[in-house]
Amino acid sequence: MKFDVSKTGLEMVLKPWEADAMKYLWSCAPEYVGSSQVYEHLKGLGRSHSNRTGRSISRASVINFLNYAADHGWISHKETSGRGGMRRIYCGDERRLSFFSTVCDEVSDAVVAFGKLASVPVDEL
Image (cartoon, rainbow, N blue to C red; front, side, top):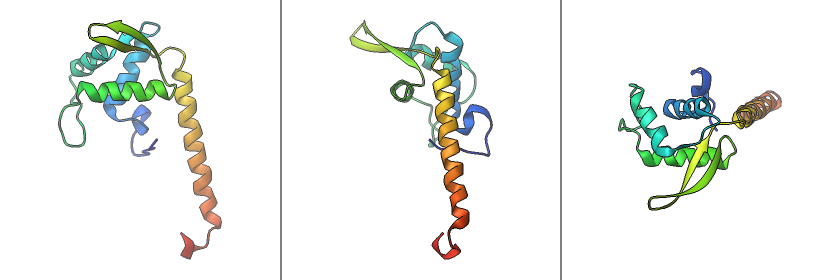
């Protein structure tokens, strides 16, 4: 996880569209929603959600992020059967605290590691 002190809020640790996706999931809780609903929500915000190349975020990028967030315990998910096979649906539920706890732990570890640099000789930095 990267921490960008030039940003504020969730965008300190997430891309803008990822932050909007998380906010949407948290606002929908306790309901589960599919990746298509998250993708349509992002498209409907009127903000330009683009990647580094300036292209619009694809639904596949949304799915990959949601799976990453679920695999890291930031959101819940369920496997359901749908048209074409199995799919995941997602919920922001009580795992919101897990997300914030993870961020706090990683930032704290980074600050401690940075503080240890004070005792390192300059020529070893």
